Length: 277
Image 1 (cartoon, rainbow, N blue to C red):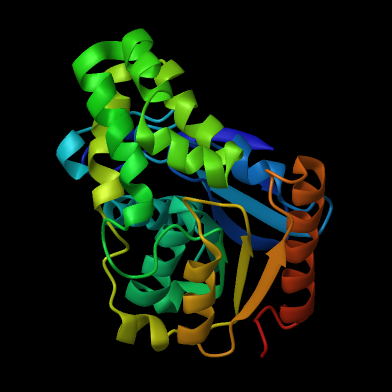
Image 2: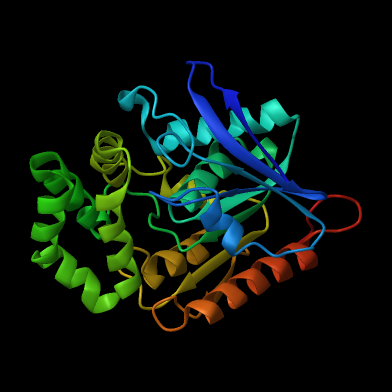
């Protein structure tokens, strides 16, 4: 396993992890996550090379210019990492925001994408989906009141109550933003990314022409099953796998997630080094 950094064209130092050997898989984390989130559900000893970039403002990566914080920039940074590593083509995808990054790259740089994995998607095509509004509430409270008072007010908010009723796991993740070390950076991220989107159209999504796995679960406010179902309808030949949610059983969620990834990669990839339908 290799952990290192590379410098983007605008001078931002970004951390990444390069683990394993075999088929390269660019496997990205969600908003507020780091390299540990995608690693936790990735199949072990499967002849795969997992490459995970910690996006700007996440993990050990620098925030850089806040005006550059966007899904489009994160996608370009991920492509820059592949260039840095000399990886011409890869399976690309991720969880939540990571899925949006993968979706964008499949549309904007199809020549670099052998396969696509959209796990617990938080976006389809449109920007600022209603299910991302709780993040904006967290940003507003952090900016106005700081960590301690902001969390106290968030605990009493209608936004948290609505999320908690559907997904205690989502609610716990939202609370976690009040304890992140970089308070100012967290405000910038949560003020910008939830208002953003993959920056692709429904027609462009429908033109994706690589084997695609979609992984989703119920009991999830931020990543509702209907988003995954819509993407399955749009992307020709996409396969949807519904797994147990963390809210129901975290251990089973992890087990089923890993198996869904393993099966997709094992079945779709051939000895010739390319996916087959």
